[in-house]
Length: 529
Image 1 (tube, rainbow, N blue to C red):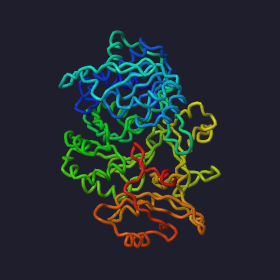
Image 2: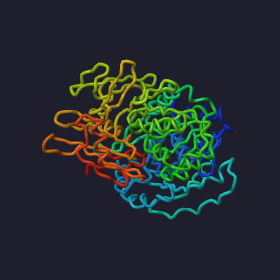
Image 3: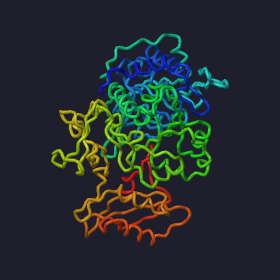
Image 4: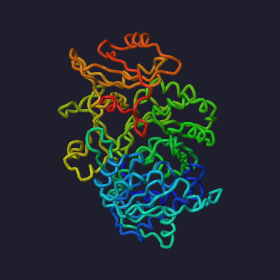
């Protein structure tokens, strides 16, 4: 199901069709499709006429979920640039690696995060820094309710520095020029989390991303009603899951995306839920769990909600049940990874199988293999491999790393252990690297966590393997107990009643909180250190 359209072509079609409808909103501002088209044209024109950048050059976007993001990403792609999505909370060390690895020449950064860029810019090839404040687009929006003064020009940090409003003003003086783009040209360098080594840039083409957007909207046809959906976006747009769902799939069908700038601020997130008649909610297990424990969320009107999707980490059965009990909506779990733009599988509406990630989206092949690479049959645990139009071109300037995961026939080794059922639905057993081997028996942390999280006194938990003189490895479980109390002895008895002896955690450690990434994933690697 390969799509031969570029991202700008998809956007152009959407803006013509849905011009006056709201595309994005957040922090009291809203951006129509016409606004999105006009302002992204202005940014493209700025890049073309007021910088020395050429098509194929890399620009970094370092922003939380502000309405500026879709303007910037679509403007950059219209100008033929390659976008490097950059985590706003990266340390100077992480910024330096990513900027230099990608060869970034221009950065757009949120004003409250400019310090990190200033610290490293002298040691990079960056020529221009564009700084934007959260409410900066106010004067440029046709739907803005108030006039917000233009910010003062930011202080120069050693290279040309200007505000986004100034860049858009400069760009508005000329027309953006169409660029000769192919659907197979690279659109993004999407950096992996670096959990298996140095962070690498997955080369995602226009076709990878537009194909995946089309795969998603086809697979979930009943959810994407043209021009009618209002979907909450608490996950960061710099993450490929949120980008493809909100900036591509939803935009292609005229959806309204409600951006949450800081999902850790649950009070603000709940206010967004209260003020919008949401029809869709895209999140992940830890966020659903936090909301279900938030008093304000219990008062929200969710009568318009039609769907809830989960990805990024395993969804526990306890959270799935609690969400359905509270909202009446069964969470549809899906599966993907950066290298697949990202969606591979998803549970379709009306055919959800809890405990699975659904079946492959159209045009996607999956198989499981043993350690020697031999194909396994249904219901056998093996490494999941994926082939389809959404699979990346490879890792940026890392041919050896590419060969390790991508073969000559286009099969991508995911590193995830899975079972493909007889009916085609896929169950992710666990990350290959997270598997614990106890006396020769394979133990999968997700199973331990799923069972443990169902105990009434457990708020969150995470399982890892630790060295053990007798069994090679043993299971250690980190637990965040519920504020209402936690009986450790009773908990241990519960685990013994639910798990085979070798799976029962040998060590349990209570914690106030578990380490998480900015996307909300629990970081098992930090628990191992």
